[in-house]
Length: 260
Image (cartoon, rainbow, N blue to C red; front, side, top):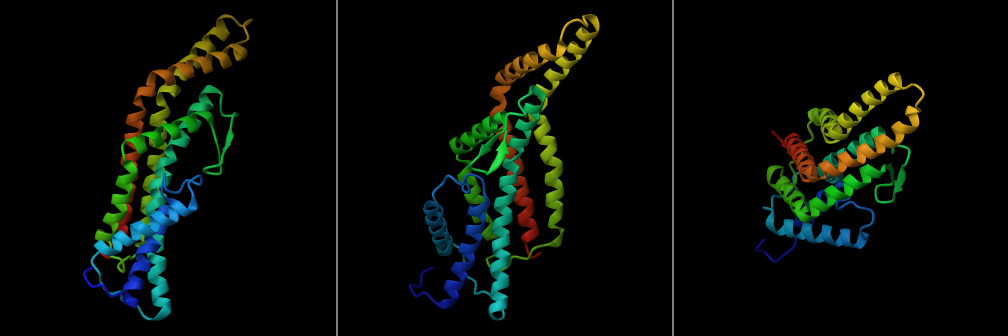
C-alpha cells in the first residue's frame, strides 16, 4: 500500500487478515505443535499478517454495524481454522497407519502419551509421524502450506468468505481417503503377517503339541520388524501420499469458501 496513512477501515482490514492467519497457525501441522513457543507463533502470525496486508489488494469491507463486522470476523476465522484443520487431519493418517501396523505386530498395548498432541499414540505411529514430519521439514513443505494460505486470499477475498453448507462433502471425502490411505501404508506388514498366521494355523494342525501362541507372538514381532525395515525406503512415497491428500482437501475446501 503506497499511502502512509493508516485509517480505521484499513485497521479493520488488517484485523480480518490477522484472524484468518491466526486460525490457520493454530490448527495447521508443524505450526500448531505445542512444544513450539507461543511467542514465536504470535510473532510469526503478526509478521505474516503484515506481509499479507501490504501485498493483498485493499478492498473496503462491507458490513452493517458491529454485528456485521463480527460475522465477517467469524467467517474468516472459520476459514483459517478449517484450512489448518484439514491439513492437520490429513497428517493424522500416519497415526492410524501406525496403529494398524501395531495391531498386527502386537504392539497395540504399548501406548504412550504424546505431550505434543495430548493423545495416546503407538510406537510405530510415533515413528511414522516423526519420519514424515522430518520429510516435511527437509522438503520445505511448510513453505507450501504458507503459500496455500496466501493463495486463499487471492481466491477468497478478505471480506468475501461465504461458507457453503455443502462443505460437509469435504469431510465425507476425507473419511473415505483416511482409511484407504492408512490401509495402503500398512498393507505390506498386514499381508506378511496374514501369511504368517496362515502358516501358524497349518503348523497348529500338523503339530498340535507345539504352543503356537508363544511362537506366534515372537514370530509376528520378528516378521513385522523385518518387513518394516525392508519397506522403510517407501516412507518418502508415504509422505507424498499424505501431502497430496492434504493439498487436495485444502483446495476443495477453498472452493466451498468462494462466493460463487
